[in-house]
Every structure is written in C-alpha cells, then in structure tokens.
Length: 260
Image (cartoon, rainbow, N blue to C red):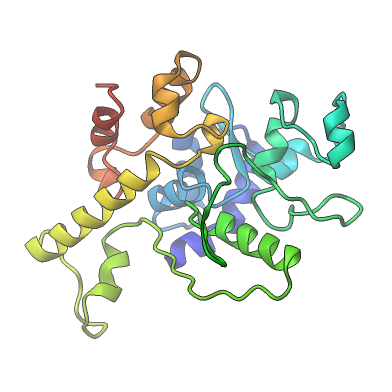
C-alpha cells in the first residue's frame, strides 16, 4: 500500500504536465519515476476512483483539477433549481461532479460546501434513527461522513468499516503472523480467502453507481443501449491476466452482466 501513497504526487504531476495519457504510458512514466508497482497504482487511483482523474471518450486519462482549472462553465437555471438552491447536473456540468468527490474540492469558490446527490442512488438504508451508508471508495465515504456532520453536528458514528479491494498483501490482517511470514498467493487457504473477498466485492460493485457511467450502476448500464458502450469500455480498461491477480475478474463481471 505504501507504493500507492508514495505514487500519488508523481501520478498527479504526470497527468497534469503530460496528460491526456493512456494507461500504458502512465505506467511507463510511473516506473521511470521510481514507482515499484505501477499496475497497482493505476488500479487503485484510476479504476477504484481514489484520485481526481477523469477518463476521456478515447480512454485516455486526465487530471481534472488541471483540465478544469480556470474554465468558465455556463448553465441555464430552471425554476426548480432557483427555488431549491441547487444545480441539476446535466452533461454540461458532468466533469465537475467527479471532481467534487475528492478533497479539497468539496466546496465552491466562496467556501460554501458542495453536496452531491444522485436521484435513485442516495436512498441509504434508514433503520429507526440509524442511517447505514455504503460507498465504493474511501473518498466517497469521507465525503458522506463530512456531509452528515455538517447537516447534523450531533451525529454519532457507531461503526466505520472500510475494506478496499486489493491484492494478496491486503489479506495480511486476516492471517496472523510476524513480518517474516510472507503470504503465498499459491497457498490454497490464501487463494480461497482472496477469491471469496474479490467475489463479494464484485457482487457489491455490480449494483453501485459508477461516475464513469454517469451515475448508472453496471447492471443498469448493461440494460441501457445508450450506456452499454461506456460499460464495455470501462470493463475493457480493467487489468487482465497476471496483472489482474487479486483484482476483480473482468470475464466474471462480463458474464454477470450478460456481455460475454
């Protein structure tokens, strides 16, 4: 995990100075900058949406703060937007929505906080006076908790569980041992635990709204002819073969979505 953290700055610099870039070029530049595991960095930062990067229609990646910095966006306000002090995000503002998912972009230029709501998706389970929030990235969870605290300063967090998908190294917490005990990905017990973990995440991912799909879930995009192409591109961008070890199985996802 240290490689991903250390690579955050070179990744932003690479995309800001040389973007838009394809994934192979990003990995090449990361490797040239001394990053030990470029594949893991690209998967975590780009595919798991843990960085303010955006993907163009030609599959190249850009650094959104650099791309959007200094630009002026126009948007015709409708009566409901004025009445409720809100903006309806249409394609003309879509790029901004992705940026709002990340710090320090949770506010407008005047300091006013930004709250992003997605119709039909922000209906988290309410049980009595307890609200259960589930997200598919660290940044979204931080944003959700920040919004709840802002709306109700007295809110109490009863439990905060985070289990990001990753490779075999992430399983070290599940298997006790000292630092000399290396996890063998070919060990049947380790492989079985990893496979179970990844399959659970895949099931969850299929019904999560994905920014790259304009907020549609993968299942919804698969059933929508106007979104299916974007879903296919997204799946094609996922690592495969040896590079996908410990990550979601793209063929399994395609089968679950009826795209085989």
